[in-house]
Amino acid sequence: MKNVVIMELVYFCQIYMYEIGGRALFGLDLRKKKTILFLGSLLCLCLLCMAETDRGMNIVFVIRDLLVMSLSIVWFEGEIKRKCIAALSIFSVSACLNEVFGVVLESVVSIQPYWERMYDVGEILCTTISLFLLGKIKKKMQQETEKLRTILKNAAIYIVFLMGICQAIAVEGLLYARKYLPTQQIKTAYEVMGIVSFVAIAGVILFVIYIRTANEQMEKLLMTEYDLQKMQKQYYTLLLNREADTKKYRHDMKNHLLCLYAMAENGDRTNLQSYIKEMQNDFDIIDKRCYVTGNEILDILLNYHLTDLQDTKIIVTGRCSKITGMNDMELCTIFSNIIQNAVEELKRQEKKEKYIKVIVKQGRHFVSVKVANSSDYMWNEKNETRKKDKRNHGFGLENVKEAIGRNGGEISFLADGKEVSVEVILPL
Image: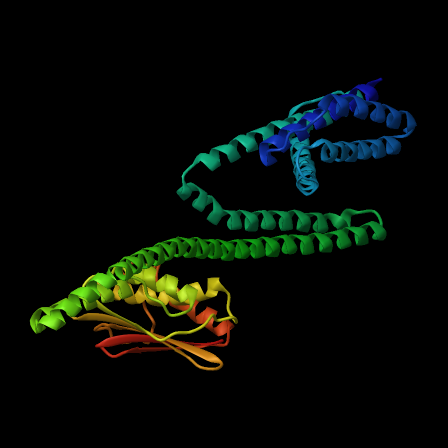
């Protein structure tokens, strides 16, 4: 009777633990909970009737734990992959927490040996409460500021290292105690488990480092993609505005020609020259409304960064086709850093005659893009940034070099105190 009561209590507590853990940590609800409770209770009773020895009881308890996890996978809401990850995660976390709370309960609470299995109920209740609190903390963190999330993200890697050290110390303690074991076979088994544990700890730490690095690269990629989409939107708006101005200009062209013809017929040379000059100025304004090189990414970047320049002579010459050997993200990384650095340098200048030149040349196998701007900067061999915040800047140039190097290109710099130029050569 005692085993029946404990079996059913533990089963009910585990179901509620999976329900709370799934909802708190993964946002998954457990469907048909009454069916799970009823069906699982019958199966547990059947298993209990088959167990005759203490070893058989232990096997029954293991089967019960796997049964709860399996039923949770079946009746969790959502896609099967997410349900499996949630159930396995709750199983792993609860197994560890149960052991921790078991040690604490046994040292604090005294239970008669006849009801010793009641510790299992206490362990699961404590674990369920912990999962509930973890869910609340997770929800609170999602509502906190970006600064707090950044601090926690940076601290995560150190927490993993600390956990790895603690686990290594625990395994080393078990290996140290193997000399007190009765037989050589058990000692050998402990040594093998110790080696496997150390390899697993090292593997977990390396895996976390890999995940962290991959996440950082993904964040950079997403930020680049976001910036590119924002620049694309502005570029297409400029194209539409230029097209509208061109249509207006074409619409008025017939009237302009009539006026020009009348002035020429009357011999009004002064007004004729003035009128032609005004038309030319209007045409130049339309032409400079949008810079076109033939490469979409380069056009987007030029029109995004150069439109804000004031009192600066802007020269964009040459054309090139799509660079098929590189993806848009890498092209954006290369040219956005180069063009942005040139624009920022021009904005820092106080002299009146400022200019920026973008020269594009395409051959059969390579394309050259040169960005030159007026500057009194002399080249620094240390490649240091001129920005005041040196701690958070100066990495753009390194990203450019890496992207160009990965794609078999070349980059060259020149700063002679009058002009700063950067030339990039990339394979088509």
